[in-house]
Length: 567
Ligand code: HEM
Image (cartoon, rainbow, N blue to C red; front, top):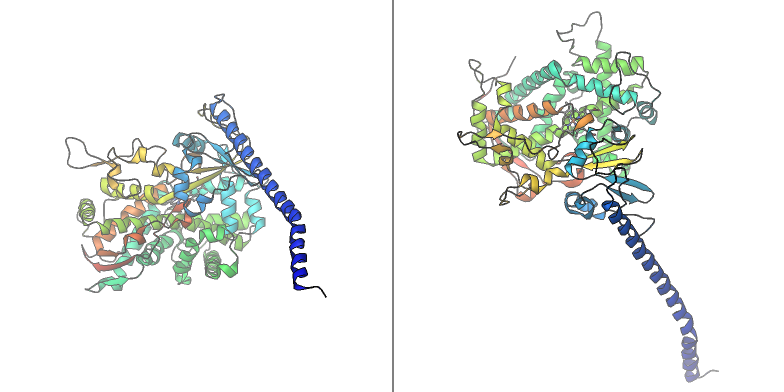
């Protein structure tokens, strides 16, 4: 029987006998780690040298250099973008570079284009297309079927004969659809839309029973007023009354849908986002129901059209003709048509509502600004029309109203323009880089936060603070400021620029200014929010106007001039 002592000896000798083996194991690991470290450092060094070589090369045609990165296969993973996108785009290494760069992510290359002249020059190009974004938005956010999305992006589709594709590098159906939308939102059509919106909003404010209480009322979410009154007035103005009358819970579900854009774009599964997916189903069913009802109720021979060809069922010729073209001429499914119109309603309502909401917060929070705005609004009342109306063309020229609108968009609207290139870029970019065909470009609108453009010399109003004075200039001989955008070209791009410029940009301005005018006229409002609640919610960064991160309550009571219902 082995003694205790002999056990110890054999245990010790076992350990001793294992040592070389373990050390060998450790040294293999250490060796592998050293090799990996050497590879990553060498890879980083090589990509850094290539970058600086490319930057010094001043020949006209070159491909943007790859951003230096350590691990060959992974590429540069922009972690900072996830938790602080604004900081990433304004101060990270990539964006401080003065020329476009290529970001390699696994096997894919993305181009980041910074500096306003580069961004503007690229947006101006008709050889790039935003089809990739449109298709992804329709498929992932609006649940359009793969077949319909494929048709929208197909070069084989034909458009109505009257449409001649002239300048957009988009597939025929996208290009035609864009043309029709631009026509709907321009000239007299836009004026009619505005008149309907103004009247609807006026009537909704006049009919708001809670506002009629002498002591006013509190709302937990000030945004609810915008969702249920302002957005509803706009939806009625676009679609006629049928959509909301037949689907009374539409506005709430619609807002849940709009608010969840990132959820849909990330393809979050239903079990993680049941409310968002349910809301999307509800709004899609409502739009399909409105389509069905309007197409059954409208009779070409009987229905009375107004002088501009609009009818009460479809609300406007635009929706009626679009439905007819896609369903009857092109044979699209009713469900896909609902996705298409839902996408349009999103584009037409989400950003404009949130920006107007911010403007109201800014104005009601600052009593001096509120007085200035009330003075401007008073100066635009139409003589002899009681308290009912404003001279709109004068109203939208008011400097402080315009400055509030523009400053809110500068501060809160952060777009990421995603483009696919199809040809070489504009010749103006002589010292910039050009790129090969069919690559994705991402063009952030970081100019909005460029302190060289937006701050004064003493930096008394930092770029991340709301200050409408940035857009105002006082001339020597006048007490009244002038609204001023000169010098900010390319640094203020809420509506994009160039070939895909937002067709709703004029309506956006009028919507905001008219809504603000009606609100300051009709009621007083205390904004009940802590400064931390008014910080930007970055979850939708790159997708338009960002909302506040916290809950913003308000106390509203009728004030200013009371308004009567318009017939
Ligand atoms: C604050 C409000 C708004 C912002 C920030 C905004 C922003 C934009 C931007 C940046 C684009 C171009 C995207 C690109 O270049 O890839 C765009 C396109 C578009 N916007 Fe707006 N927009 C606003 C309001 C509106 C309104 C009120 C409408 C309609 C009434 C509208 C309808 C559209 C449509 C239909 C497109 C696509 C146009 C096309 O396919 O050619 N937008 N918007």
